[in-house]
Length: 210
Length: 210
Image (cartoon, chains in turn yellow, purple):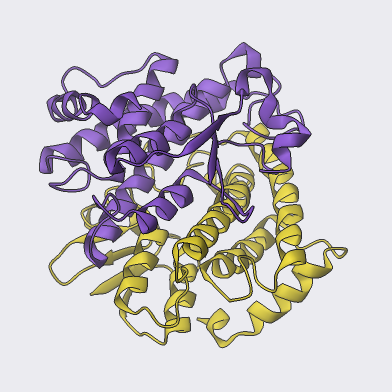
């Protein structure tokens, strides 16, 4: 199998960290988002939505969406578990992962895509039709990022990791979103001691460099 | 356990259909979104994001996010499987479910919340701070809904169901989004014969009335 990804984008990083935590190496192909390679016919035949990452299986099946690709690897390589071990932990990890995606990742993306001049007419990733940036949506995104940081600190006040006492996929997406927020010049507020303690721990793991 | 939900909203319906397909009955509590019961302190103590649905376990743990709640039930009641049976089918179902959520559900929600006068100052669900509607975002949503319908018809040209030859969670979210799109006066285009064939089949299942 083969992973189509891009070193400069936040979502593929989630998979690289996920695999590093499991000690798994797979073949990768870089799709240069900078030059729009993801919107060219060759890549669109692999992923018609023009997004990275995509995992191509040996039978040619292409699976996209970061969570779905992580799920595939979790099934193939169950150790160490990153998506839970029983109904309760699986549900809590998935719930918190989605909070971070919807409240954090999407908010940073809204703020970034709708304020960056290069995306003035391409404000949604992977869509080939022109999509105009919406300055008000960027403002909505910045406000949501503030709420995201508040929520993250609340979670981490109650647990060592985002979804409990064990490192999980929710920490991986959390780390990637906190680092992605630098693109819009936002970082963990200095009074968020729980989040700062956690960030120090997760960003020091060897997988964070993957 | 107890499911906090609301009969008039699209996301809780996903869980009702999911449970009906499994033949499972659980206690439910209606949270009246119409009167803003989801934003009152009593419900915010159960779900600080003010969204429905939330599943409260017997030990008091609250799990929100529709996918996470479905995952919990899939683990507890594996038959019939609705989220796949092996790594490949689990990943494909999750991938297509997310396409429908991001390309369909979120697009309809953007179009609906940003054009409905009652939400002029509450354009994001479950957030207590005022959030102004953005007319341009509604337009972006309508365009995305058209792309969603095109993608749905492509999937259904290749399979009986959205994610293969077997009914799955991807069909449940698909059905709920197609019905949600009526709120913005959009429906499956009449030339989309694959989608129309599928819609007839899935909306005739007894679970669709749950």
